[in-house]
Length: 162
Image 1 (cartoon, helix red, strand yellow):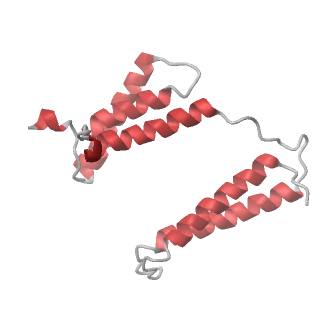
Image 2 (cartoon, helix red, strand yellow):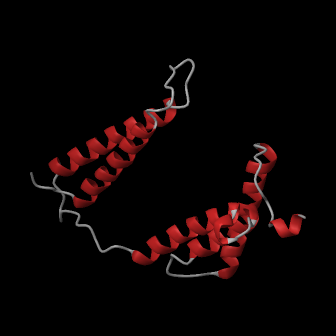
């Protein structure tokens, strides 16, 4: 079978893989029913829908002819590195890493670090624009997670709140 669109084919594989992972990961949780949903209902349903969508995209990539075959380009290593690094740094700063002695720096510092590191993935860097974006994200996150949802995790670095 000839792949007529490489981009669609690999996107379909990605959807199928992630969908199967969610569906299989939710098997150990109670399903419930539509009237009284259990903790596994939503992730299993979304996983199965993603798997079906991925299968449909794969089918289309094998049957619908494209002009140039929509070849996959080179990997964008710089954006991949900075986006992954931003998320890892966010997690480490939010909760800390006691195993290496890194204290929790809290939500606000973690959001600023996430925004600044992720902004390095692009071709241009505008300090003022990134600072404004980080400030807006920090305010919205504080309002949503701390004030409205009342989640209990550090907002500020531990050494400032003692």
